[in-house]
Image 1 (cartoon, rainbow, N blue to C red):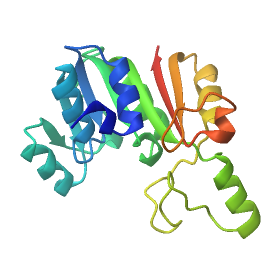
Image 2: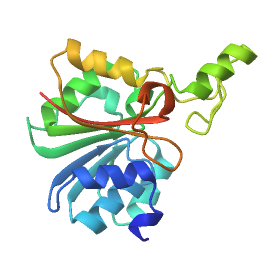
Image 3: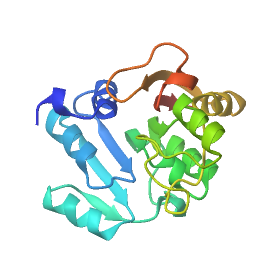
Length: 197
């Protein structure tokens, strides 16, 4: 797969992970991101995923992915044992947001977080005009089938980091096909942050 064909959020994450890094991917899904980092950045990676079918897909790709619930914590991992911990499109789905993020920051020298921006203008308009929970390309689930538990915006996450003295080392924002540089809390569908303590 050519780099240009990869999802935009994957390409952004790849820019932040230097070759040869150690990576823990929390909520690995089918392993697509972890495989890309392994193939293109020669990372030594490990994943944790709760869905058994997704784990089978990871194993078929030759990836080291363990069956586990990241809400249960990362007690088996030493402090700063990975260069990067990645929570891409998974942090908004955990039950215990704060303990999971705190554990990720303990285990990783840096943490990459990517999440859908629930304050995107299409979501706002949909809610305002229809009076119903939004269904958009970045939030493709109806309210009763969504895996998302925490409905945060880009501004919410920045405020959260500031209030907890979490350093934001880098931030990028995306639409469907391009990066967003103006008013990201309104125009971006996804926020991607590199954070550390």
